[in-house]
Length: 320
Ligand SMILES: C[S@@+](CC[C@H](N)C(=O)[O-])C[C@H]1O[C@@H](n2cnc3c(N)ncnc32)[C@H](O)[C@@H]1O
Image (cartoon, rainbow, N blue to C red; front, side):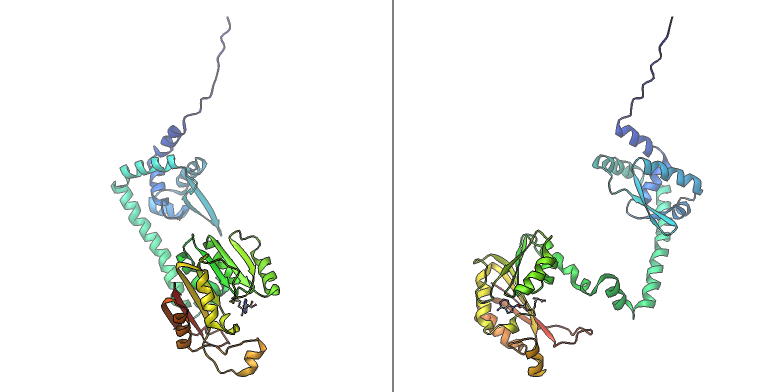
């Protein structure tokens, strides 16, 4: 008589696999630490007061099951909770963490972890204590000189249609467009527009239109925000242009004008760049905006940029 033995491997449902991973206290202590912070293996050893081979073995299991990931930096690997963790695993972890997180061993871990993180914070503090004089240059070198005001882009309502009027080569259009429903760059110079086109061709929310500020190729009320950056000193009749800009704004829409304050650099400077106006007195811009029936008019001088060689600037804002 033959006896056949069938060996079948039945995979455990994911929840059981996950429970078996979470069933080990060292692993849940590791997860509690990595939930919100990154630690290296040696930092985890110090916090958990456990030998390195044991911590490495648990990290290997957690990584194999998708709970944690590591990023390499120099000779260290920094572990963190995996951002790819699915919602079921997160929910399970929240339950387990909620149950065990208050136990004294987890609280002691958290206290030792704070000391490790404090050591890192001290390194940053020491760095800035020594680099205050250099920081502006380092920041510009590392991240570019335009980063300073970048957080303000988050204030733009993503439903807005923005007009960058006199957009030139589209530098501002390119920065604004990803934060808006649409950003329309308008300029009359085909040469400037073709440079802008090359810069904007893969930004889906950017659009270019060729036209004059005096008769904008923009429908009534199409814009939520109109920006005139360094262009008003090129127009012969700024008051008429501001009235035309108002036509293109929706109720509650805003206009921003960035331009030069009145300067006395002489005709040589203005002629070289084809300027029509040698900048503006702030009161004059304020009066023009009021004449164009804008409300909430505000015209403010901007602080000088130490690296700039041109005239001082102002920023005007107003609402329909
Ligand atoms: C100094 S550039 C500024 C470009 C851009 N706004 C910036 O901040 O870099 C002025 C731009 O305004 C455009 N421009 C001047 N007068 C204009 C007008 N009346 N209608 C349309 N575009 C005009 C010029 O062609 C030029 O591209």
